[in-house]
Image (cartoon, rainbow, N blue to C red; front, top):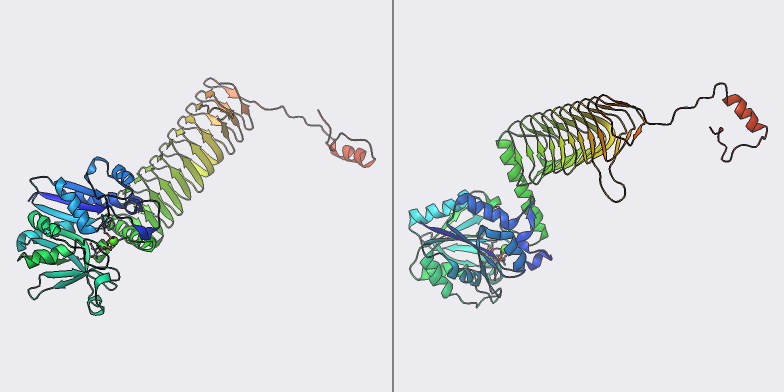
Length: 471
Ligand code: UD1
Ligand code: CA
């Protein structure tokens, strides 16, 4: 069997009321069309054709080199869309699966089931059906006495009795190529919507003595489709559930699945623990025995073994093994936290590398910096990296100690084993082993305050602003 897939994505998606094409709307962080292309790649079809029409440039861009493109100039119905794809079919293809771009949850093994059924039944077409509680808006499937598909009636064309049928067309079909070509040519648009319905091909094939069999989907969640924003949120919820269940089956502890969000592109290892309020997005990878959450959002972030990350936002960053990050840390793009580091509360790191065993325990901003191993960055330290025009780098060598509230005015290089005193404003580089103190010497006036207050009470003129005297 040489297989092609035709994915229909030419329609307006009018009911979405969106400037974005329907198939480009993300479900769990991934555009619907990519869900389908991923599934087809997993399935391993020999050729995929995406039919585009409305807003085609963006759809073509999203498809990239992953499929051939066919153009349906005018949206005259699903049957007409398939017709537009037929000239693009590779000559050696004998079986064609047709899918709609607005049903992103279909699984590879379900499509595989259609191929198997087509083979074992020697059928001209197999259609995936579902028995649903609420069939509103969907095509109803009617069988003949042999149990083969006789016809599909769209809701808009159905009588009240026909609407009472809860067996619906999911919009996934496997066709014999010749039967598809023949039946698509014969389609008419004499129906309520004036469209060429793909669904009519099944009756045409049957009327010509062909065999069309139904296959009922095992998990009806897979065939949920998106026509408006409400359905988008429902499909999002189903996709989210499928992703969470997959990771739990693969050994991830998810304490509160109702309050955990994992995008389709995320990768987790067994024995990861996700606490409530965890949001994992993009190319985020979490290694074994790491604990994420509560209330943590990681985007494109790599977390290594046994790290603990809580109440944190991290974007395009890396967190080393056994590191502790948070509560209330913010890691901005380009940050790499070494093994066993501690990044504590109200710490912001940007484009910064922390060597192993380094601590930034509280209230600090470290940006555009390269901090060595075993460094202690005190409370309130700020790398002053921006002069209003340009960003400058700060380098701190291994084993150095930066006292609380120090300002490191970049560009600045501090060597290894340097000791910077608390409150210093450091403007000059310091070599290895240096002791740096850069603050105004203290003035203490002994036995002073009571006399000063008395002078002030006696209406003596004081320095402007009532200061306790200058120095
Ligand atoms: C379709 C089926 C219906 C089925 C339902 C399942 C038909 C006639 N009806 O109805 O039986 O129960 O899906 O979700 O097939 N498209 C084009 N060109 C067109 C028209 C549509 O490419 O001219 C594309 C759309 O972009 C969309 C897909 O085909 O991705 C389905 O079209 P849609 O209008 O959503 O069909 P439904 O009314 O949902
Ligand atoms: Ca639809």
